[in-house]
Amino acid sequence: MRLNKLLVAAGLGAFLAFSSAAHAEKTLFAQIGGEVKLRRTVDSFVEVMLADERINFAFANTDLGIFKRRLYDQLCEITDGPCTYKGRNMFEAHKKLDVTNAQFNALAEDLYKAFDRQGVPYRVQNKVMKLLAPMQADIVRKRTGQ
Amino acid sequence: MLFGLRCVFASLLLPALAHAGPFDRIGADGGKLLLTAGFSDVEGAGGGGIVPWALITGYGSNQSWGANSHYSDVRLREFDLRTAGIAVGVLDRLELSVARQEFEVTGTALAGIEASQDIVGVKFRLAGDAVYGQDGWLPQIALGAQFKRHGGFENGGALVSPTQLGADEDEGVDVYISGTKVFLGSNLLINVTARYGNANQFGLLGFGGDEEPDGTVNGEATVGYLLTRKLAVGGEYRMKPDNLGVDDEGDAWDAFVAYAPNRHLSIVAAYVNLGSILGPVTGVNDDQTGSYLSVQFGF
Image (cartoon, rainbow over all chains, first blue to last red; front, top):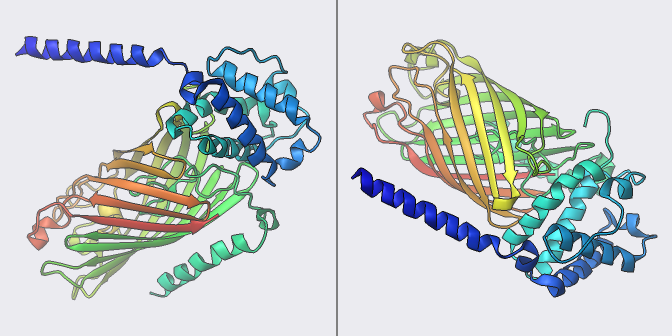
């Protein structure tokens, strides 16, 4: 009886180890759909964001071509794609902008919508968001009591 | 009854305020992500259905505020519990809530008896952020208190106060600490709450009793799975004290579907089991199971 349980546990353990190993082979970059899908997502994101009155004013003087390339490189890099982000770090890039939590969240929502437009599954979207969420600490201006 | 009407009025008024113009006209920014304002639990706190979360209610960010009103109906085999309330979240830090519960016996020989309870809730976020802290273990942690006052029984003949059932008091305070964390990588929301108090059936049967007069610590938990940005399913479990000899009070649980199409409306539907209620008195010892439906308006 005890042996049976051991065998079941061992089998389960092996299954879990195998399935997680199989899962680990595919990068998040690949799960999104690779370069083509990610570049289209960045294009959609800029469209959604420019129509979003909560944050579009902040990009009025931005060179959108450069912005798209930088954002692509950054998303590609953090999702283990074959890219290197060469722009400023998030703290340096935002320290003069007085970004609020509400604006940070608005941007996150626009990125969700862009992924939706490109048909990237919600579960994959959230894996990207998991990597982006901690950047809140560098991007949003620190205020007393927060 | 009057209170109920007022709540319905508030329900209409709150979204009207939000739609009166851009959010900033009333200083409310709607700055949180969908679903991250939580819902209104059965005691009026921001949470799930029967468990309060560490999230501060409303969609206001840390520089703003939000508010909502809700109406919930729990239809059990032999009982009906209706709750209406309003709540305000300030600076994503402080939550204040007022709720009114109306409890009605709809079956057994006691059918027709009604009870009511008023609950004033306060919740303060101590640390952490349930969403941003994806790279660390720290959940969002909040400390809360619920000040409850039983309004007595109606249509109960000689029964007018829960003290006649063996309860020590007709008012009491629950103190709780909640930890809530969203695990984006696995689409999970997990909340754990520890509550200290002596409320019998949430306080609807008074506070403390012949079997246990003092407060005890009980655990509560919610696990939610995020299906989309607007839709979640999950379950909750809430341990309850058993203080009264006339009531074999048991634990409660539910399985829910929660939907927030936008920042002004959310709907929660659930299958709920509140355990046995007044079994030794009614002769019905079965668990009280049924439906839970809650609608919340706000911003």
